[in-house]
Length: 178
Ligand SMILES: CCCCCCCCCCCCCC(=O)SCCNC(=O)CCNC(=O)[C@H](O)C(C)(C)COP(=O)(O)OP(=O)(O)OC[C@H]1O[C@@H](n2cnc3c(N)ncnc32)[C@H](O)[C@@H]1OP(=O)(O)O
Image (cartoon, protein in one colour):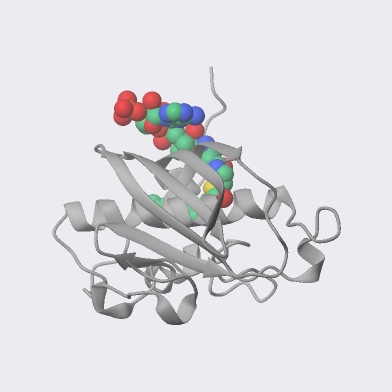
């Protein structure tokens, strides 16, 4: 079990973050894209059967003074969840981070966040996640967000392998119902 904080994170899969293995074209996400200079640069690591990430909110992430904005909490759960889903599909296919095969990119189909108690602004936030269902293209991920070891939020999401129409430069997908 990893301790709270980046320094205590047990880094499996050769200590490589999932986001560091996304192909460049798919590494621009505001929450977790390593190539987005204005982004949050979230990093997801394997920790045994779970995944873990850590992020310290800044003053601009305030909801009311002293507490973290709920949208940031949702973003952390979201980006950590899509990375957890990507890793689950990669493992299912027999790969480990560091293999030459690209890590598949998942997108958020559905996201539920339960805010259990106000999240204090100050401590590093730790999100732990796990894939609870792994289908052909769909992965269900559950997660918890902690501040100073206290559970503040829970997440449940459906992540889906990104369709070819989301590849940069691809022709637009037909509108639903056409
Ligand atoms: C090729 C590589 C491309 C890489 C691109 C990288 C971009 C990176 C961007 C970075 C992003 C970073 C993160 C972000 O910010 S992602 C940004 C926010 N998310 C989006 O913009 C996604 C928009 N939605 C879509 O594109 C499509 O609807 C998707 C792709 C999600 C599914 O449409 P698609 O036609 O492909 O799939 P399908 O309809 O055959 O469904 C497949 C399975 O999923 C199940 N399901 C679907 N929806 C829901 C739902 N709401 N609740 C529960 N389940 C749902 C469905 O029942 C089925 O399950 P099953 O029957 O198999 O059990």
